[in-house]
Length: 413
Image (cartoon, rainbow, N blue to C red; front, side, top):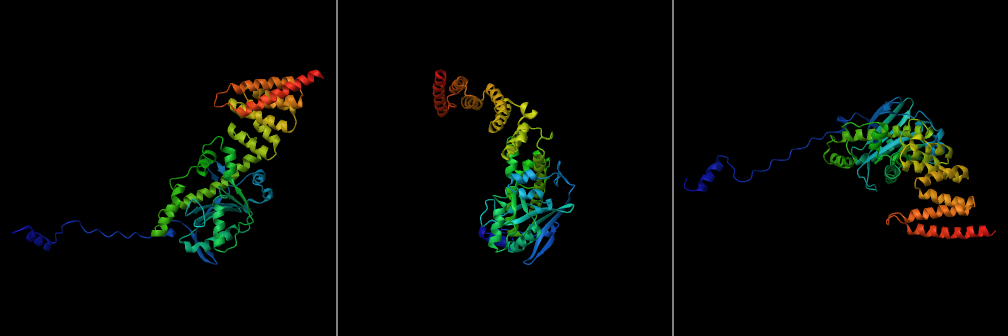
């Protein structure tokens, strides 16, 4: 060979290529239908078929440490939800509902591609998960949902008032379909769960409540909720349902946990003085809830629980002030004053102020009221500079001057 160009030509004839190899074509991803991964059935509607995965749980099933079906009345829970008419309803008239959506922010562009619903029928808890294989099936999905919830009187959800129901309601409107939820009462367990357990638990999301309260632990089939929209988006793009099966498990447990949590809350509120409650923070929170429902006798019993009385000084002070507040409202001064005095001895400024008010306005003992006010004023002034409330000091000084005049007047008469 005389030169490199001749050599290059000869090598090319032999099939040798120079430079970057031609890229290999991307492999075609095989479509995997949801029907091949998740057991289910076709749910017939007037708008066509919708795929649904259904499950049956015995009403004797234990979800962690909790029965699935309520074994007590749920009168107080319904009263808290301002739906007292539901107290006499059969549990079969309650729908337990949770959705999986294409986004986590709501809005008209957000679609519930999976709607999980459960209800008790005879001796079973029946769960249906209506799944959109493609968005064109939405009318069929909504029609199937309407059929399943027919005859129900209430929805039970977890943050459903703020998220799930507004989205579902929007979809019924956009599809011009009659909404079966328009006349239903709604019991959103998120809010009452926070009221009962937020003092003790750092997080009140459903996953944490399952572990801490229901003693239930999900398997590794579960996925984080924030991945759900992404997995469904991938499925719509490539038809591969391999990631969707985990969403069915995630949604199923959400719905079943709703029923178990409903059962747990119903039992606690029907018998809040039960020995099963061991945490002072929970007992105090339930006492506050009972007081808000005008069940003051039970509330006072809870505040006086041995678990609270044996807790920290802060817990004891809350107990004393809460019980005294009930007695004050009912003008039972002989019961309130010793509690304020005990709380005052623990350093409670609130209790000292209540004592000053009592001695001035009820007992008309201006000397005692002045003595209490002077002590409280000294206590407030001695606080760290950052904690000193100048407005409170001004109010106490005003009270002090008023009491001095009243005491002088009483000596003159």
